[in-house]
Image (cartoon, rainbow, N blue to C red; front, side, top):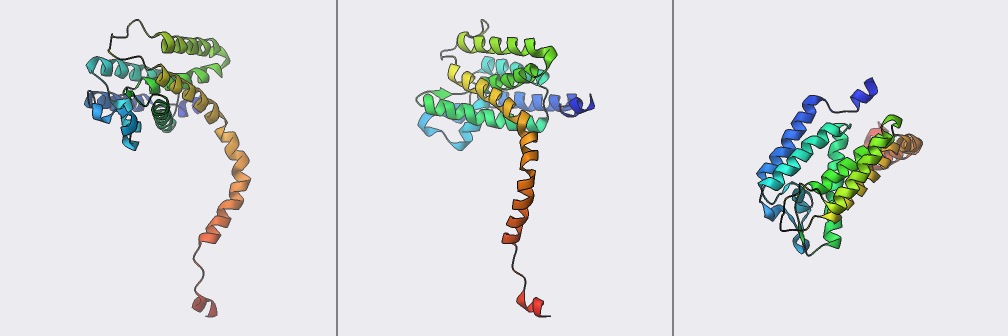
Length: 212
């Protein structure tokens, strides 16, 4: 339908977003100074850590998953950007709070969140509920067990980051579904509050002008 098409990225937009994500993966490969590092975490590394990879194999795997996720997602580009930002912050804060002694780098936590978001979208459609349920089960299995294709890196699979990402994506899907309804319910309050704030912040009229 026209409404569904308007809610999705065009093929050109998907391509541009895919290229940008892959470029960030390649450019930041091995730049561990931008990873999340416990007590030395900064506002920059909360975001940059997700685009840093340990080596070319790590970067290539996440780049391919990024492209695949963009192909699966049925989402506007503005919501995608917001979702990636929310997932980045949530995964970084979760890691910083519960694993402060360990560094973190990679896009997998965000990817799990994007997939969790899409699984909820499938569950909301009657004809694709089985796909959504199966997707969530596969995501949980990959989160806990790992993929047989995962290279033998000298670091633990970031189960915490994957779990926080998946949970955040699911919650984001539920919240965003009700945003239009909540916005319409708050509109009467907004119509009263906004004019009142503008009136209070407006500069007082020039007394000389009122006398003229």
